[in-house]
Amino acid sequence: MISLFIAAATSLTITILGTPVAIRVLRDNNIGQFIQEELEGHAHKRGTPTMGGVVMLIGVVAGYVAPHFRFYSLSDGFGFSTEPFASAGWLAVFAFLGMGAIGFFDDFVKYARKQNKGLSKRWKFVGQLAVAGLFAWGAVASGVSTELWVTGSRSTGIDLGPWLYGVLVLLMLTAAANAVNLTDGLDGLVAGSGSFVFGAYVLVAYWQFRNVTVYHVEGALDLGTFGAAVVGAVLGFLWWNAAPAKIIMGDTGSQALGGGLAALALLTNTHLLLVLLGGLYVMVTVSVILQVFSFRVFGKRIFRMAPIHHHFELKGWPETTVIVRFWILAGAMVAVGVGLFYADFLAVTEVGR
Image (cartoon, rainbow, N blue to C red; front, side):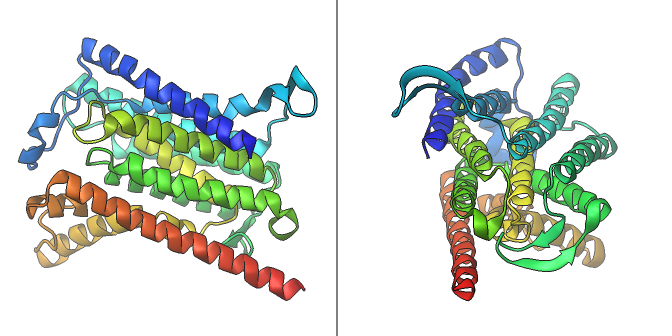
């Protein structure tokens, strides 16, 4: 439990103190946000420093590493010692940084071109494929289950094998990264909702660590430590990203968060539970799919604008109202997901008695 607090406190401190420095550096180099012309209410955001996700990446890595170095213990007092790193933890960090790197290049291309168009879909996919392939190889090599799981204690009974598992990794990493990226259109929406979702995975991983005979997840405590580091980082960043935002995380942050989220689902064997825990991101993505499908097939739009949070803006909802209400939706979906996770645990343990 102490590891979780150290991870969260370290990343929170780095992001809340480091973000103002990043704001000054980004402003000095004229690295600002480009906006969609359709959103007249977002005109004030033009030029807001972007690529702030870099601070989150630094904070998360430091937050994950910090608890593995001890300078004091209750039993021995002061003294230096180290705790071993779990391969699962490094895999989660790799997915987080790998997808964040793709987002960084996307943001940099936007800055270089001075427009809201970054990397082409082809180059994004190539990068995502490389990250997914290396992640899948590392996961299989370290003994991660290749079965398709629901909640960690309940499996579908379908063993995908290494190759189909690699396809699952690619689908989950790209889907989660793109879903979070689509949601990142309002000040603080992703940072606030992300604290709920990653907070849920801290509970999930720590519970698996405490109940190893039920879950058989290697490195569960390190996964919880990684999740706690992300929670601290997004909360520290939210301090400056809350409306009206002084800095925007950009694709660097949103892609990284999506990659980290998918990694936690894959490594805690909660593949299908992610759909519920990340329900807000699923809802936003589905709104875009429905909008495109309806326009191409029927020539009509379902929403005034997609993703759906912009639809409510165009209906006249203040931005802060949309943000808070979407936070409430995210929290409600997370609560249901955690409840389902615990209900399955109770069902399995009751059967075992």
